[in-house]
Image: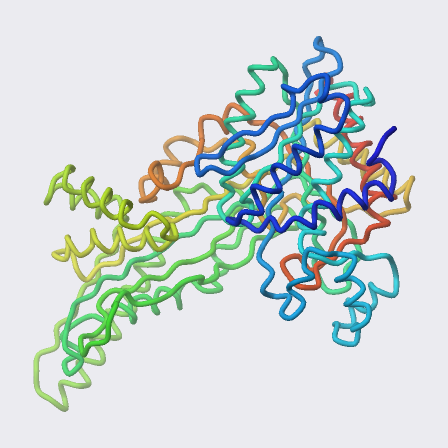
Length: 544
């Protein structure tokens, strides 16, 4: 008897998954991995084939889960079902935080207090059957759908093999998927199969309040996090013009980069958002009357197809423009002050360099062994430090060693890195998505919209990588923690390179206390669409 092919069975499964507080970097992630393993092991297929259901450790001790269904060993074509089982924290629920993982009670509480809700949420409450709770939308509904597909595959429904992989830590650094890529490559060799597509189950995100359109995605937006270490010159606050304030340097860069439309990329009718500042601060750790001569500023930058080397050059040019502007402003202010207090103004020059250039200068002055010692000491003494903060500390330490270059602005990159991926023009994906859109219209009277890039970031970024090695080096050489505290399996990503699609349930308000899922539509529409998409992929994989 099938357990998860009906609305009742699916809903029970989803509520069971939501009930586990699998917040990223908390114990609940481990409990969730065990729960998924236990849930899938109840299928007769895995009783007969226990080695097809596995835990896999991540480098930090967490676990990801794989479940492989193969009814005919001679069949090689395999679809990957990708999901993540971690969720964001629940502080936004306020006094209802204790109900965040109890969807029935939370939904009842929200209905009782619907006057507190935005009118759009009230409209949803009145129009359909919505289930509230952390993870209902993002993305335990997708996990439950994939479990349902595994159950269906175990009955022999699909012509090919199905491999489900569900990972932790998508919401922070994607550590689960960064480990999962190597697992997928290992399993491909072990099972001797051919991956034809990766189907993700991230939810369909609304584009504006009141949006009711369902979306299907054939790619995922990329992201980098560039930073600028601004190292000026110390001076007493009584002589501010004799130095260079790091805060002023950082502020000028932020003024140059924030909302800068030159960084917006377009692909057909889609566009990336403008850059946005995420961190800006000085690096003084105590109060004194010395100006803060060092500061840092970090930016969120989303990507489609622009080469990384071009982005690095653009960032250097922006920093040079900011430096020139600040030099001129400081000189102009010095001239004005010199008319009040006689002195000879001097025009200061700010060097703009990359982290790699700073590192090479430091090696020349102090030797490789000394730099290795300092990096090892920094990481050893800060085992639990935030990766961005650790990067900033390391760049600051090198800049302090090389203060002969000051004043200087140093470009560097910090975790995380999400490569952009897009399969819209892949023949198999193009054919499949056209068929799925047509099927949604004819079968469900649903205007399913195909979007080229999933805007919320996803683990699909690591399914393939086509970046040129020389282009990549302009990025990796300026990424201080890459290869030590933070690793990206570029070689495995290149080997696993397969086309991607994302079909998930319709939900709203991800990462908000009003996160919710339209439960009827999941089983009435999304579930059969995923089945149809998988059938179409298998039927046409040999033709494309």
